[in-house]
Length: 451
Image (tube, rainbow, N blue to C red; front, side):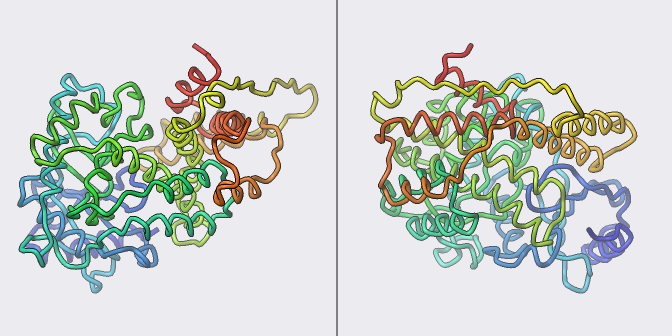
């Protein structure tokens, strides 16, 4: 992590070059699975610095912060509620790669946004902004999007996911099942690729008073199928506690599609929408796994990385709920019985009890910390909870052979008993990793009949 004094000094050079005063009150913002965000003031105005945690972290990314900033400027000019970029970091500033934006009003907190008074209004405005993003064109076609933004090849993208899966061990059966489904159901390339934001979801949207005030985090923008953007924000993981509202956690898919179609003139294809829901669920499952690899490599040693890696189990459960629609009725109706996990410890403290004790002690420190440190404390307590719950799981054999069979199509959801086996494994893994995940309750009700 960069020294605060070095960061403040470099940022002062950036702001002076852009014609602003000396930055003060520099504070790290919570959240952000990849890039760092720092809020500060200069004169009477508030700004946000967006930067990479290290220069090594930018290696292998599709484009740099200069292109990202140019995309944001083009989107803002097209009427999208994107922030105003006021300055770009240069190598001589000595504080890495990134840019500075004016701070926007509103909150990015999904739990607050999803409880605002008029979610239907927010949903319409989100559909409007997404349609405007999809209306942007590359400079080569007379538009304003800079060169360097990649065009997605669907087949190549699936092959890349498969390579990531093998690099991560290739031993997650539900992900293997998803990859096989993607290969077998990949649609033809869209007649015209549109600019995709790439990460359009709760957590990257700002809102205030039931109005959309900002669209953030453009680092994985690309040209591709508009259904990909539509689907990503509707994934269960981004609906947070409003699992019951499938469109961004704000409302119905019917209302979302109608508002998008009215603004964009693009007719939503349900089959393509489902394909991209499954694709992006696999994509994010592998994205979570990669967080652990980034931590191991030393590129980013933030505690949050290792904890996010354990959220892979959320996506495996969601993926199975999506894929099981294609299973034969006899397999979908097969009963699911969870193992009895009850156990009483009478001797020395167990691993579960030790982890729980440390988490309880950390809770006593909460009021002594502020800002990002307080956020990291919560992440640490989550990590200890995962350790405690996982210690209670029954040992399982390697899933490598099953994953290989699923990738090869030798086993499918029509294989007797396989769906029930995968359901049990998904529930047990998620019970250890994220037991409060809303989709887990829905899955247990659907598969076991719990209420």
